[in-house]
Length: 159
Image 1 (cartoon, one colour):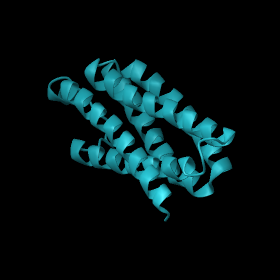
Image 2 (cartoon, one colour; image 1 turned 90 degrees about the vertical axis):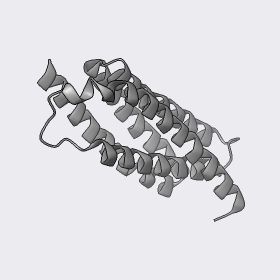
Image 3 (cartoon, one colour; image 1 turned 135 degrees about the vertical axis):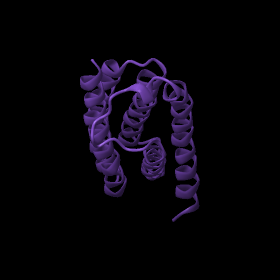
């Protein structure tokens, strides 16, 4: 690993973890009263495991973005890939706000669907720049698919 790759990956992981921390702040609002009272599907994951998986996803996302960024931000494909990454990261953080803080599971579900589509675009652009970076986003895409199903079930069971 080169010094440039290490620095850029570390920076990108830090940015992703900041978004994760902001999601945690939004989560604290709804998890105290609203969330425990909801009917949950049988495949519900405990909050501690849920948080740990998100941390792992943010680290993988950051490493992937660092790999792409290390190819040179001056390149058109790198810029496009990182713009897609930034937009999906914004949608990711917005989900926590919609679901937990604002207590709007249906709108949060719509956000997750758009997020998943953006992740697919991001994977596509990352693959153009670097295959490893694209593969690092696959667990994240699968996790968001799980989140879509879980969010849908929360909405369905509590509507």
